[in-house]
Image (tube, rainbow, N blue to C red; front, side, top):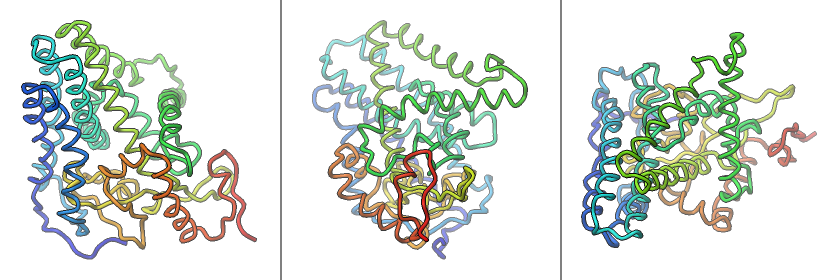
Length: 378
C-alpha cells in the first residue's frame, strides 16, 4: 500500500515553515507597490511549480505511530500561523488605507495576494486544526476561517465531506466532465446549505432546535461579524472592501483545491443507499516535495481521507497501485483547472483509466453524477 521506506522518527519540521517567508514578502510588495504586488501569486503558483520540478517527489513515509511529543515544531507551525495571519491582514488594511503611494490597482493586487496567502496557507492550516481533538486547536481553526468568511467549511468538511466523499451526497466531489466554472457556483451554494443542515440534524437527534446556542453557526456568525467590524474600524469602507476582496480570493483558492482533489472519483454503490468504505483510491494523490512543504502535505490527500485523524507530518504516500496520481502538484493543477478544455484533456483519460482499473464491472457511470444506482455488468 505505502512505501516501505520510513523517515527518522524526528523528521525535520523546518521545510514546512517555508510558508512564513510569504509574510515579509507581502510587506515588501506593499512597500514597493506597482507590479511588485504580483510577487505573492507568482511565488506560490509558479515558483513552487518550478521547485517541484527541481526537488522531485517525496515517496518516503514517516512512522504513522509517531507521538505528538515528537511533533512539537510541526504542531506549533499551524498554531503560530493564526496570530501571524491576523496581524498581517489587519496590518495591511491599516497600512494600505493610511498611505498614498499605492494606486487603486496596486491595492487590489496586494489584497489579491493576501487572499492567496489566507486561502492557500490559512484555510489549509485551519483544515489541519479542525481535524484535531483539542478544543484550542479547533478554535484556532475557526479564527482562521472567520478571517475569510467561510466558517461553515468546518461543519461541511467534518460532517458532510468526509462522510459522503465520492458520492452524490457530497457537494465537494467534482463530477466527471464538470468544469470548474460550473462547479464553483454550485459548491458555494450547496456547501453552505449542507453544512447548516448537518448541524441542524445533529441537534435534532438530541431533541434540540437549530436555534440552540450549542449550534456552532452562532459562533461562526459572531466571529465573522467581529472580523468585518474590525476591518471597518481600521480602514473604513475601503478597509472593508479590501477585507472582502481577500476573503473572496481565499475561498476561490480553497474550492480550486477541492475541485482537484476528487475530480471524477466515486465510491461504488452497494445498494440500499450504501457505498463502499473510503479507500486511498478515492482521492487524487500528489507527493511533489516542494509544494507539500508549502501545503503541509495536503497533496497526500489519499491518506488524509483514509486516516483523517493523522497529523500532517504523518500522512503517508500511497503508490500508483493504491491511489491515483496527479501528473503535477497543486500549483500546476489548480491553474489547469481554470482552463476546462485543457483540464479535461489531461484528467479525463486518467479518470477513465481509474474506472477500468478498480471497477471494470460498472458499465454505466452516468448515475454516479445523480442520485441513482449504477448498473453492474452482467
